Length: 215
Image: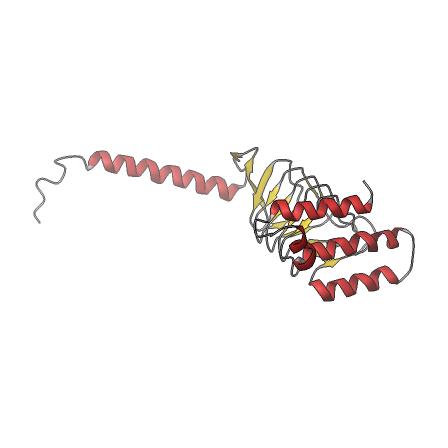
């Protein structure tokens, strides 16, 4: 798919995924996320052509205009949608598949100062909630969902939902995940113990249990 087709896919994505969209013209005129991604499609081509200085300068202009910072080197898949978008940062070596959605305040960031792959790779149809930080050269599998304000520093399997700081898998293929985290196990055991005690108390508190108690 060429870059014009990619822009068309981005436009359709905004219309399909945002119920507030009032048609394609509304998106073209009013959506900073669409503006930033469209500009990046052009800027990335300049970057790949080896043109010095200009791509970074243009990216900074787009950042000033939209509040969204996308490094010229980032590789975005088709149908890429940034909803609202203020405060989104996408690092140089970030890569995404098709159908990815980011909400405001998301960072696809690095944790290394080395000139190497240091930003995340997102698969197809990934959704990243508002304020989430996805850090390092990790891989987020296809159809994964990252909860708002989560901090993700490890690979996420396909079809998983992760939340927390650091993020942990809470759903896998639509089913609750049984965590191996010691604290999670302890809390689950404690909850099971409390439930058992409540059942026992209910049995001891059956009809007539308090007949001899003066009120």
